[in-house]
Image (tube, rainbow, N blue to C red; front, side, top):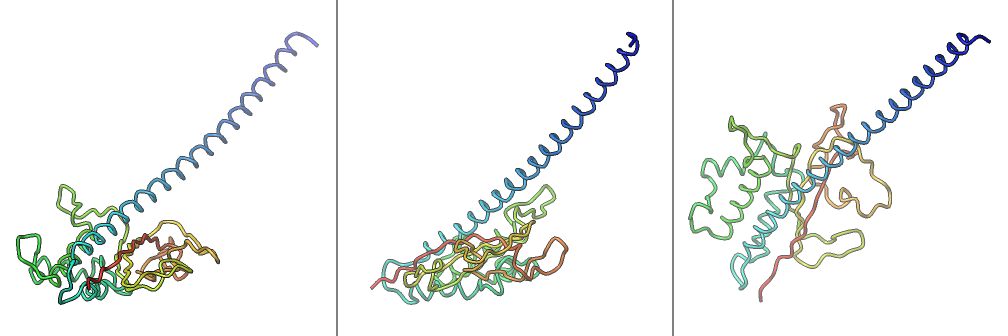
Length: 237
């Protein structure tokens, strides 16, 4: 074989090697981009969960502060019942189409206990729920145009209690209340039989209010995300 023929074969082999290398590199970059997208999604879900937990903690602290160390009328349990009655699982707080308690605080139908008014425990409970609904609506997060830019998608809040159980097989102490914050997830998470850590099996807060990626009702309850906190209501003798 002549030298020119050998050079042509060598050049052809080199071109094939370069093309194979580029294909391998492209596949690697595609895999890396997929990992980056997945990491960003998980990071955002963790951020939403952190924000939801902060919202639940806010109301838990308000409820703890609205308790008396002495036997009073109304009792601590009666005050706690107000929180549960006005933030039920079937009509949770945070719906921008309703937002009744937040609206009542804005038009002063509910006393603004942060404005220096001497509020009764009942008035304080109503104020706490109204202020909490404002947080759920993102009223504390506005842009330069003063438009609300809440950080969680379709967030809702509920108070349940007294509850009998804190987890499957775990009995709750008397006068235990559950605070739940729910929001819209962007990926389906099917329920697994026997998974005792699935909060969706404990609370029906905002169940049926969310949508699938196809914009249809989430009948299977796969897009509802939850965080829960428990608070014990003291009963002074």
